[in-house]
Length: 291
Image (cartoon, rainbow, N blue to C red; front, top):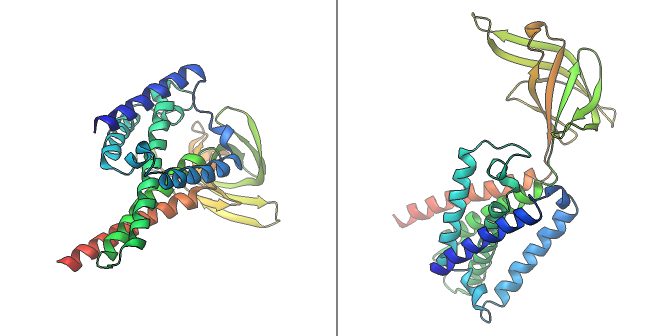
């Protein structure tokens, strides 16, 4: 266990050194197709390490709980810090944990352990003659492979995720939006505000605000939709959320601020989550079968 905590501590120190020398993690450098190449390379590294596990002690160590438990301890501490501090783009080290090298390195290390353990269990299943542990084996693989997939794709997909805000005006199509860096970005679709909707409580405070919009796509297909705060619509790979409005005009607002989010890796993240849920169900079925 000491070795596990020593490795985790070394990654924290290495991460702090990288943070001081090269600055925060520049996710934009890993945009497609670079992140796809990195993912393929990461899988190849896991396979090579597993293949050489009997020759290199450090590789075989990855498949033990002595490696996994300390790594999870470091991850929990960093995640708790992330939850207790306000996260914002361009903030201080602890206020922008997704670009904080120690945080990233620990999670890469956990992904490496997950991939190694999953491959190890997969090979054990094929070597095992008895099939009386089929539920537990499949559940184990679904849980660990699902977590591995969700963790790696969510991390690498961060480079391709786009989040912009668009100010729409009644009756005027708009195709430009503002990035978090306050630069103007032209989108492959235009949005026209048809009607702003507001419902209020008796004291006049907002109860609900939404927008009736017309989405104009490059394919020539026009989409009419109503966008609420927690009920987005989707077009051309973008999810469109209601974000804000002209608060001085209130219900008479002639503008509506929309937030548009595009995350092409999200289906893979959801696949990993569904695999974990399936693994949990199989664990329950296996437990009932034993009972």
